[in-house]
Amino acid sequence: MRSANNAGPKGARTIPDIDESLVARLLATQFPDWAALPLARISPGGWDNRTFRLGTDMLVRIPSAPAYALQIEKEQRWLPQLAPRLPLRIPEPLALGRAGHGLPWAWSVYRWLPGEAAATGRVAALPVFARDLAHFLAALHRIDADGGPQPGIDNFHRGGGLAVYDAQARQAIELLKHRIDAAAAIMVWERAIRSTWCYPPRWVHGDISPGNLLVVDGALSAVIDFGQLAIGDPACDLAIAWTFFFGESRDAFHSQLELDHDTWDRGRGWALWKALVVAAGLADAIAQDKQHCWKVIDEILLDHRHTGN
Image 1: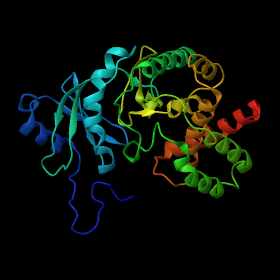
Image 2: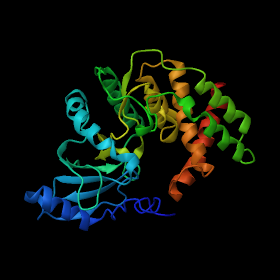
Image 3: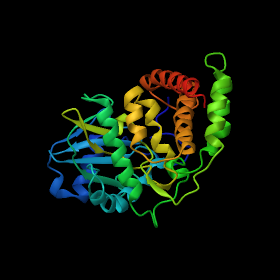
């Protein structure tokens, strides 16, 4: 696959490799007090951003492509306002870096949050983890959303209408019709897009996934990566019910959130859409994600058969 750093038409600006050398140059010219601190790239460091450990208590995050650059100032503005009202730690911006040394967009320095991502770390009790996450989302939903960022192309429509992905989802189902129960997938999808959020907008994280949930001593300790933050329909944050939870843990997650059946149907639709487009090769993904998406599709269709909707 061609690197997004170097893609573009002839004559377009060439974006430098986002590596330790570039970060060191940016720090030296913009934050010289931190320039002598140890610097090391974190791997895996996320899809949307390149992440670097700076000293012992900071990290640097740089968007990996133009599509993610708008997320930086949004996090800088809103995270300090949300943090005091939430029961878990979230990223704390310490500084806003500016374009330089060939990098054409802003970047951030954050306080380091301890823990391992739930995708790879040990979760002691998944039902407890699910309840704690639901309590976090319920608290997020209670925060006044007045003036918050609207969903749109810059956050891939998280918090907006799921029907924006209707054509893509149906294309994926058609491509996969010999490998999945296409009729059941269509039923789940059409049920998801049949309704819309009809209440005042709520804050949504936009990318609640195991890679963005930190664990310390087996318990949920922090939620990170708010690049897709918006206000609107909270359904997108429910997809984890089918991508990470099952059985008792899914029930625990569901029971702690006071949302109607239509919203849960849309949440299942968000999970199905993402799994379908990855499985069908319509979205870039690493091999591990491609393998996992088949399990997600199976889980969603099994849930559909068991619940009858």
